[in-house]
Length: 158
Image (spheres, one colour):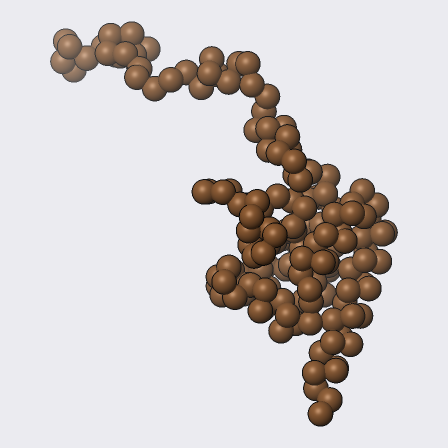
C-alpha cells in the first residue's frame, strides 16, 4: 500500500473529509418520516392499513390490496410535484388491476373506473368518511359494487 493512503477507513474520513451532511444530526430535531407524512391533512396510516385489508374493487380478489391513490379531478388538485394525492382518495385494487389503471395513465383513469361502473371519487370519499371501522368499509364497498353492477346491467339493455 501507498504511504498516502491510511489502512484505517476512519482515517480517510478524518484526512479527506466527508462532504455529505450527517443525516442523524440533520434529523435530530425532526420526527420520523411516517409521522411527517401523516401530518399532511388527509393522510392517515390507519386508513391506508384498512384500505389494504379490503378486497380488490374490480375483481374481488381477497388479500392485501394495493391502495390506489386517485389522480383525477379533486384528487389531482391535492397533488404536487412528486406527490401523490392524500390518503383520502385511495381505493383498494389488487396488483393486476392496479397495474392496469396505471398503464392507462392519469388522463384516462376516470374513464377506466367508469367502464367498470364505479364513481371513483364518490367511493373514495365514502371510504374516508367511514374510515376507522373495517366492517363499515366492507359495507360501503359492497354497496358501491352493487351500484356498479346495476350500472353495467343498465348499459347492456337496449
